Length: 189
Image (cartoon, rainbow, N blue to C red; front, top):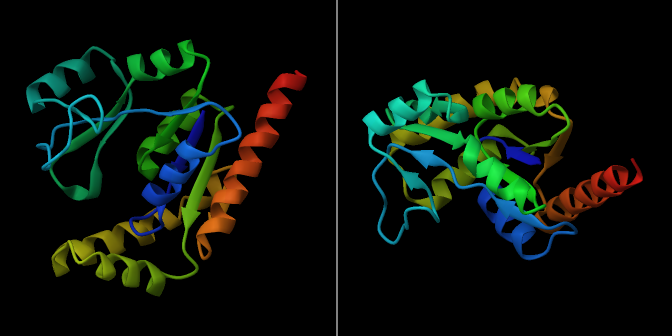
């Protein structure tokens, strides 16, 4: 299992796309569940499992999630379904979890052998620049995400690896090398 997390603007989505196209291991993205409504062009079961709040709460109470949280204080719940992890592992692939820090810390407790990577930028100013360059969020959302980033950075030492995404190619290559090394260790056991 590869757990990848870090603040908004760290480049997680871009790195995930590159890893899924060219990783040294067979890697499959875990599809998260959420209570937020689908955005245009999002497909249920591919981008997210879109659940009503009631269905999410019901599944949560039955222990169906290995982790869940309200992300970015948005009022929407996100979580990783146990069945999704089992499905991917059953196909003998690496599970790729791109999740927030709170969820990652919970998953690391359940799967202590997971390869955990905290992705960051060289500075808070760079986070802010990237968020503003997106041009998709209001000022209050940007400020909230920057506060969240500061909080999340405090947990970076809990990850096995920290990767600074100041050069996309280098960051992707670093994670590829980590995957290849971990795969070799697993085969040697």
